[in-house]
Amino acid sequence: WGDQVGLVADPVSAFESGLGAFTRNAVTSAGEWGGEAWWPGCYTGDAELHTLKIGLILDVPFWEKYGNASLSYVEGVIAEASFVLENQLNIRLEVADLTIYKSA
Image (cartoon, rainbow, N blue to C red):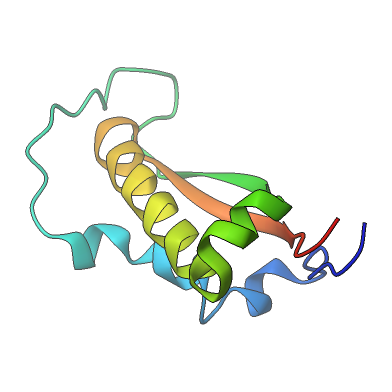
């Protein structure tokens, strides 16, 4: 697969200064939310914050378009999505694995 950044072996420490830390602070840094909260009462256990861990793969066309700004771009997208999910469903979105392909 060519030049690859690879899967993150330890997502917590690897993302502490990147995606993980950014998404964990999305609500406090993004300000007031004007949407409608569906919790409590949406699903069993929704009074407690849940974390949805995801893996991402950034392909060669993505890298070619955003280059060194790729991580910053993804940080913003994940933070916005997590902000909505946290406020609407009490679910935090967190990146557990990330692979970036820089060449085919």
